[in-house]
Image (tube, rainbow over the protein chains, first blue to last red):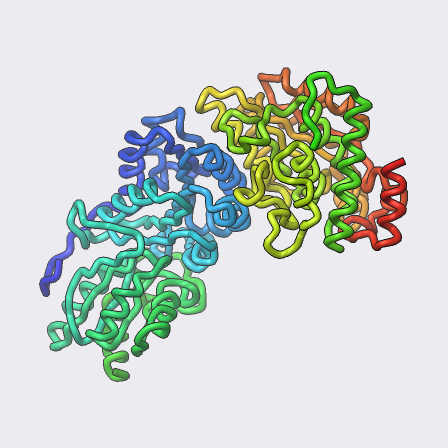
Length: 319
Length: 278
């Protein structure tokens, strides 16, 4: 998907792909145990649960307890996948993730659904805008936000095969398909979805599609933007960033997260350790959002293709 | 090193407990740091578990999949557990004196994967019972018969997560799970009863679907009997409320909350050792 003017089609929500992938890997590997905290129909963990009730536990509204139980199961050789809304599992389960997954390096897989502000109408209490910062603050955790159904599917498989703790952020709304089915996927290895040499747009989650749309607009203005799907925030793909720094010399980082501690921070940290280049950011900033339709919120809070184009123009002026 | 004997007497268990207490005060004094009060209150419980033929375990094979699990949820009491593990043969007794020093496996609070015999990283209170539920569920899923024991502090039971886990264990009828509450009646800032009372603790656990056994936590024979009674329970989880004395065995530490998290000085150590080796 590197050609200018590609029309993106709307696919499944990444949470739906999560459930399907979980069922697939759980069919193959009987050590996979799935736990949810009363949001199984929303996170799609129920896709697994209804087929494998003996390996599925709906623990009730107890996120902290759920993480602790996962710690015990992982200590006995099981591969627990635990899910809830991202805002709840990271915020309410953080100490338990610290003591029971990160510190003992256990094989716990954490799925935070309804990430970002695109959950929409439910408002700030349910909108996770700090989950990446929290997950990145757990030593040894892989932190990943797949951009579409195909990379989510691959990420669940990669999580099941990886020995150690993983955080996956799932999204509520249907998401544009930006990758082919069966796309090659590895944690820590970004996927370039469009080439260009004037600047690089680094994005993850639903901002990857927005980045591709922005690249189309920029191309009409004679600017060729490279677009990188940086699905893994930790470990960051520093090699791809270094290459892009040499070849394009300017960056826009776009993510559905607050400004601090997310993809923007990780990219900036990597760039200054290598070949620094100017960076502009498209993110929520240092604030919360509000209730509203997802598209209205992304528009109001500045996380659309239009905002990426503006950021690109700003960074090109600094180049 | 103390070998587990099939016929160990209560007097022999009491002797081992005193030996563990000597280790505890020496370790904490050497580190000049640690929690003597809550370690000493737990010694007889830990002695009964490890030396009273309660736990099915193998010090030479600490990750044996069929072993019984012991999770020290009140992680600050870990000197008592290190002493028991060393005497049981998990690691050399000499290593105890490296407590809280850099490069030591005797970390200030338990660390899973670092120290042989430690089943969970604890020290942030309230989490061990959930981990125990996970172990008990894994046993059920795999059709294994190992049992899981979790030692909690009474103050620790103020943590909400304890009750999340208690609710789940009760509803799932996790008969292989035993919680033991080291009820020494004190927490860091004072008496549990004054700060945020748990009374009635027995009724609380019972209302969550647990069978409750109350015992004098310093009558090591009685604790052993209670633990063996819990082993016979297969339908519901069991909570043993062990009534203990914080700082038990060292007169100036008993019920003296100054020694919650303070090491004895050199003179105090000598007094403690003379009392413990009478």
